[in-house]
View 1 (cartoon, rainbow, N blue to C red):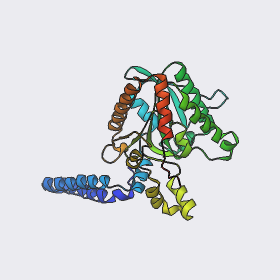
View 2 (cartoon, one colour):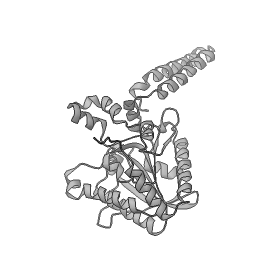
View 3 (spheres, rainbow, N blue to C red):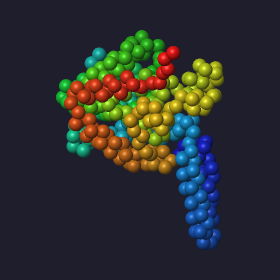
View 4 (cartoon, rainbow, N blue to C red):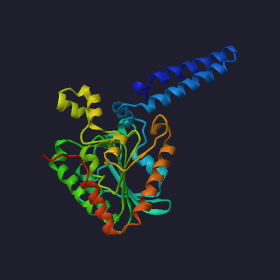
Length: 318
């Protein structure tokens, strides 16, 4: 059964009426086509109205939708000849971060992303998309491999944050993420990142120090989850809606603040309603960005990347 978000219930009510009319038409032989078409138009209009006026807290629900495409879905739809590369060369292979060699329109790239599961079993395998230090070290190994062989890097990000467990802290979670931030800034190949769902805290940033940072229309990108923010500010996680509004987590807000470079449109209803359309839009944006970045020298690439992150933020000097 498809997951229905709370704000989508008015659409579902109309769709239920349509199903009732179709059954009545079948069982009674009555011609109810005009009434059915009228309700179908109502459902479509209501959907357009709802999705054009979404609040940040509602976008949050879409970004976390359980049926939303995952990293490997995008790889399979956008790329060919994907070969996964395992391990951090220190004896571990974190399944929350997956990466490897692939071809995008016949050209080799290194594609790395955070994977979530579609079932309880898969989510346990992928640790619910929360990477551990070994995952960031594996990603760094693949970054360096791509750099050595002059391959562009694409990262796809969907995480509620890096894993906050004691073991992760003991094995250097903060240091592993910090190392990625530093080393990504120095790479001499083009890097493109897309936040496809959740982009939370350093767990997301550890794969996003890039030349082009993009977001899907209903994804979010933030320094802390709205629930975490509400717990700290108001001692009340249920005020996550207020926090989501204040944090400016949506693609439109972040585009305006120059945190991201592009918003990638999603099909009406969200990425989970049409994987192919979403992947096609992402692929077009990646190809365009890589084409533009390929025109730059190594020095220009690094300098622009440095300036991009240095200019972020607003402050007033007293």
